[in-house]
Image 1 (cartoon, rainbow, N blue to C red):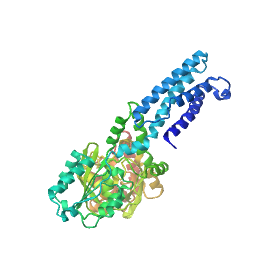
Image 2 (cartoon, rainbow, N blue to C red):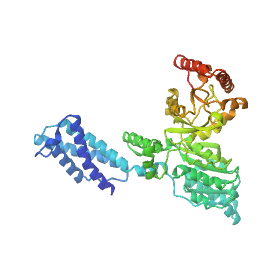
Image 3 (tube, rainbow, N blue to C red):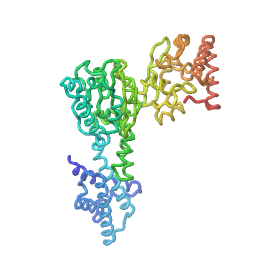
Image 4 (cartoon, rainbow, N blue to C red):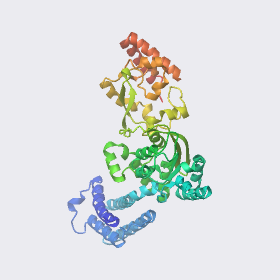
Length: 498
């Protein structure tokens, strides 16, 4: 169905919906007398329909802003004409419904036009880039005795044309001088990478935004397979700020905020909610996703890379990643609002601990990276942890993120009071003695942290050792005392684990 036909039909259906909604809100039984001769509602709808047809409102221009401006002017003209006719024939009934219909119809039509351009918006916002260029295999160029100056000049022109001048300078600084072992690509398709020869490259530079890939991890895994340990990948993602600024510039003030809200919900809610995720991936095939820093780097780490450099340039987050291992090939990564994280339980068994998401997707792979770059703050948490979302900070303060762990208690994997269930990274930070002591007992919902309020990792370990030793002497009494002390500190002293 063409856009103009869709808009014409939608406009007609909107008329019925708007008048029905207004009459219901104002408790007026409009539709009981809907077909009476000269009834104001029928007259208004007929005049609106005729005016829309004569003024060709269904013609959607290429420029969305011009379309919306034209729509507003035409609606004002139609409505003024209707008012004049009503006054001429002395039809004064339901004037508030008619006025409300004008505003609701105008706003609804503007929204429909914007949604009609939504699929185009996705590609414009995320894919504001030139067409793909073929792989530039510099090794073949050197084999053909092409001069290094000619190669580098051609390379510079290609990269600048593809991503920009300032972006090229970043790539050049991080490229090194291994031109004969470098592969330049502009692709979002992993098969373009897999068809490249094995053991031929030490560096791969991809000039296409990672957001373009339908299966991002598969793309990274393919690149991993073509690099040796120590090989480098240089790439970039388009940041959410880039997308927001693009939308706000592309639409008139006011409507641009509404469009961005719809876009934000589409990109950040639909992919993460189970029953909406299928709709999202059917429509987008996984492309054009918003990627946070945490998700981008987390995906790289899960695919065997260590991020050794980054820079934001013109709304693009460039990264330099070094291959350190083979990919994890996690077939069930945590992505939705309810997540399950692998943590050490009793006897060293890995259990799935349930939580509400407070971090960006794939953030769990970044514990080592954040530890190396941020260190620990008081209480044993990471300083300035960029993995935590704004919403996550709120639910953490209210302990809402930990409510699903009651499922682990019901399953018998955890108890109410006990040491925290730790990830592999955190567990390895502990002394061997405490590690052995920990795995002899079930982890708990309320840790001894809230009793002793330790500030350093050493103090946390001492607090947990003391609790475990007391628990081994008298388990029930120890948990009873720790429960009430922790509750007192939480409620009265406002103790928090950030």
